[in-house]
Amino acid sequence: MYQQVLSQQQQYFSSGVTKSLHWRKQQLKQLQLLLTRHETELLQALKQDLAKPVFEAMLSEINYLHTDIKHCLKQLTRWARPRRVSTGLRTFPSMAFVQPEPYGSVLIISAWNYPLQLALAPLVAVLSAGNCAVLKPSELAPATSAIMARLLPLYLDKEAVVVIEGGVPETTELLKLPFDHIMYTGNGQVGKIVLRAAAEHLTPVTLELGGKSPVYVDSSADLKLTAQRITWGKWLNAGQTCIAPDYILAHKDIAQALAEEIKAQLLQMYGDDPKLSPDYGRIINQRHLQRVQSYLDGIDLYCGGQVDAEQLYFSPTLVLDPPLDSRLMTEEIFGPVLPILSITGFDAAVRFVQKRDKPLSAYLFSNQSSQQQQWIEQISSGSQCINDVLMFMAVSELPFGGVGPSGMGQYSGKAGFEQFSHLKSVLKRPLWPELPVRFAPYADWKRKVLCWLS
Image (cartoon, rainbow, N blue to C red):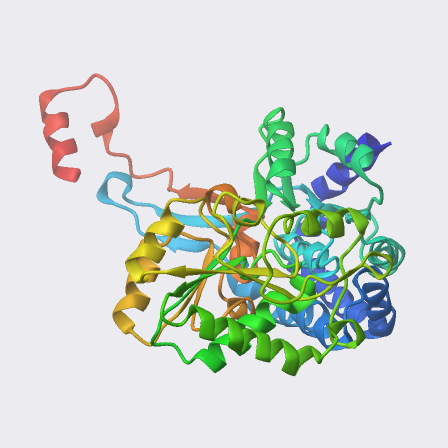
């Protein structure tokens, strides 16, 4: 069945319909219309799947997509133009340019933690580049998956965009097919499976994975503002954010004070009992709640740790100086637990991060410009924020993607357009005149002319 879906898409793509800028823009406008008309339903689905507060859902899912679409609509004509490049004397007379062209049919396998954004943001990039798409939403967010499966065919070109719901069996079957590109968002273990499957067809792959995103807080930082920004970024979506601070390295002189400030911010944002707060989300399912809970076995807690399994509630939790060989410090937490480690200073923090896998994001809080520059130069990560967290996602021109174990490839804005485009090189020459230098028989004078032209 899935082979037939792909074959029909490939045939439709071959007709050239999707290459039209008018078609691409029309699809983006229709997606925009869907988000506007069905905002309430989408918010309800996100509430049902993750208990997302309306403000969080609007900020990180629906408004994010509106901004992304508007940016693409504004820039698409310029991105799609042929890009002239200079030519040398060896090809004179000639002209050369790079022509972006779509790949064909793209498989998008999305994640559950931001089930709308992580499905539709890649789709925006895929459609902007002029491709067809098979979208496989996460089965762990069934309400959002169902509403996308119902609404997308009503608004988008059904020949070009197909939604396939299901779990591991459906994904496994899809990965057997020769798509022209695969986009996967999720964990590294499944990322390896996707990469192996794609290798069978030499299919290019974009992997958006995760990892342990570090924060270093220097003694020069404003602790109250630092704590406020970290608290917001860590416990947004109950910590289920791939770019959330995974752990803090704090200068030993301020680690305890920082923990107190974060504790105060948690009280300010979510009240005495976050379980009663309308602004605090829930864990996606029992399996992930038990996974995060298991990280705390044998660990002394600074605050938090309350769990209500029936309501999928896990309170905001702080841990001070956990053992470095604990699961809390060796696995991505992806939940509402934040370890704070005391460290001797900036150089020690840099060494600590460098010894571990390259993270998806890395954060620094410091008023020292020399440290800021060193952090940028010495820490390899997908993205970085200085004196804030997560906010690079609000800049449409910044690419988003990992490096090494945290992913490969980038999307968002122009980077997304180019990620799902083949940048085809084209050289045009007239049939006259022709200089015989390059043709056999070769002679010494031809070699000298060739060296002169180089």
